[in-house]
Amino acid sequence: MCGIVGAVAQRDVAEILVEGLRRLEYRGYDSAGVAIVDGEQNLSRIRRLGKVQALSDAVHEAKVAGGTGIAHTRWATHGEPSEANAHPHMSGDIAVVHNGIIENHEELRETLRERGFSFSSQTDTEVIAHLVEWELRTSENLLEAVQKTAAQLTGAYGTVVMNKNDPARLIVARSGSPLVIGYGMGEHFIASDQLALLPVTRRFAFLEEGDVAEITRFEVNIFDAQGNAVKREVKETQVSHDSGDKGEYRHYMLKEIYEQPVAIQRTLEGRLANGQVVSSIFGDNAEELLSKVKHVQIIACGTSYHAGLVARYWLEEWAGVSCNVEIASEFRYRKSHVFENSLLVTISQSGETADTLAALRLAKEMGYMASLTICNVPGSSLVRESDLSYMMKAGAEIGVASTKAFTVQLAGLLMLAGAIGHFNDLEPAKEAQLVKALQSLPAKIEQTLSMAESIELLAEDFAEMNHSLFLGRGEQSAIAMEGALKLKEISYIHAEAYAAGELKHGPLALIDAEMPVIVVAPNNELLEKLKSNIEEVRARGGLMYVFADENTSFESDDTMKVLKVPFCDEFIAPIVYTLPLQLLSYYVALIKGTDVDQPRNLAKSVTVE
Ligand code: M6R
Image 1 (cartoon, rainbow, N blue to C red):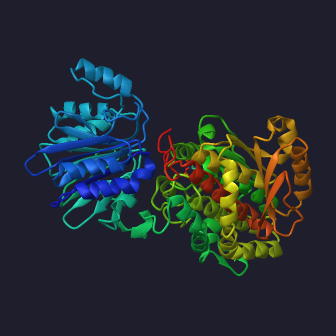
Image 2 (cartoon, protein in one colour):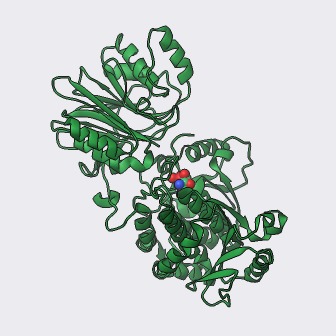
Image 3 (spheres, rainbow, N blue to C red):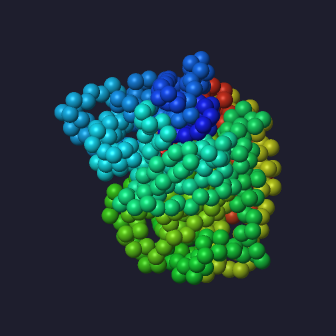
């Protein structure tokens, strides 16, 4: 959460910083700010409440010049969204931007007050600025002052510090919140995500936990937590320059929904051969490890957690291994049991979700056989800290509501079920069916996207509603959960999801004409059971919207609108049935006029607890 950009260059950096923030806005968007120093040591700080556009207008109007600067787009944790709480925060000549949470900020605030500092914001970040200012008084240079400061902070931070009197350098420190250094020609950059810097460089080095770095135009000096000089590999990124553009689409979310056939195609490429999943796609020694797996523990948050719930059905039914799925924020704070030959699987689009990362770190101490992450961001913390990784290759996902990442995660998890099943209960014929089904997926998704027009019409029924209920059975109960999350997240309509068999145990009491019920109904062995659940709703005057296989006998009538979904193999049905629900939530949000890509109160990458 929160986006950070910094630059040390000969040219004016205001444009670079603002464009970087624009590209990071999905990480937080309640306020934004920039501080820039020129060669004569004049510092300009501009902060604005609201979106980056407001800051951009102000920066242009002020004609801010200078070659060294830091910038920030905020997702409020401590202190309401306001100009006073917007970063950069200052103490004397020191300016600071920060991503994360300083857990001991109250204690530090007290100490700093006793030393005579006064606070102009409610943020935890301001303590960093004052601490650096204090430490600089007895340090040789800014680097040393930041190192001394970092040693006093507990919690998570990615921070960049600038000194008005020393405009030749920025000092950055990472603990728990990602930072990446961008290497240019006679200029260097820093950001919380490489996406911010793609217009200016393609060469990046990721800082590791505890690293502090000094960045000048000509040099980057990195020190580990012990203060030893270290090298971090500089790599050319494969991420395309236009990943941050909306192209012809009105919203990133719509663009990302329509990118799914290509994203799935990319994730499958080179990973299926001879009717089997190529097990080395999970890592070099994956085959040996996967052959020993008898239990899988999945940990994730939000949409990624829903992907895990679907995978449990696949792993237990097809691969023949037991599987538990847990929300990371729960797993990390409870005592749990490690089963024999147990593989720990984390799922995350960003690879930086604080709870998932903390759960992985905890699990590594608990004695799991190995850890595997299904992740979209190369070089992210989860990828670096896991034994094995499956790189999703979904391409950058900017919309806060996760869409293509979810379906690509599911494709990866289905491949994992195939690879583990290969050594367990999955018969060769079934394995070949699974592979064939995956290969058919890009075309099937393309076909399903053609439902968009009819779903757009359907969305009009929802715009006036305040509540909704999503139902499914088997793995589709997790798809119902994902559909409900999508709708509530971007349209702010209250949405709940239930495994349809649970209806009569309580939620049936909610049914009336004001409660639309959305049912995902593929043609599988649970369809007859689901039909009974539909009748239970119908008998109580509920209005239903059923997404049903084109080959089943569902027909629309007064109480039920049926939308036919293209026939698909049972293996990929959860992926295919996700698409109409994504489109439904998108079109409902469009009618409601909400901020589709940046829904209120949320941020894309949840790097704080
Ligand atoms: O980056 P991750 O996949 O770890 O993120 C997990 C959740 O924060 C994320 O899926 C969130 O629920 C999405 N906004 C849902 O659309």
